[in-house]
Image (cartoon, rainbow, N blue to C red; front, side, top):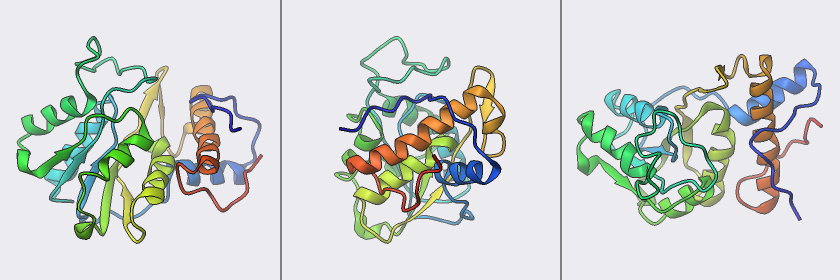
Length: 217
């Protein structure tokens, strides 16, 4: 039976090469931006979820935005989250409200508002997406979870879709976690190491495409 991997897990001592492998897996590969068929917004309460979606749409990176999210059963709402006092307000509804305020046409947005985690974001979105028209997708999510969430896409969506991360950095305990500096703070190390372990764990459970490489430790 696979244990539940917490979001923060103490990281062992790793050498430079091991750190690079952890970075590449958790932050996902760097792929140059190009116009895609759709923008996929993973659920969340961080402003980055709607800010990056608005930025991508205004850059004309895709004509459609797919928004996901009911209410997380485990996550702690961001301090700026408007609906944090109400369990009846879904993450999708708040994200969509910001998209509309930014002038994005309602007809350019499709959504699901019942999912409670990343796996459900993907599974429930399958019911609202016409895959015939999807060959590439721009993915909006936190930078240090891009690897896990895009691998979840790859497991459950048709093969052949190109995924490009258009992520944002999150801050915990006043420390911003980026691809370049995550290993310099304790919270960064613990968050990213937790994600690294979860990728392997969820791969074993069949939730995402498992890595072909061996764990660094």
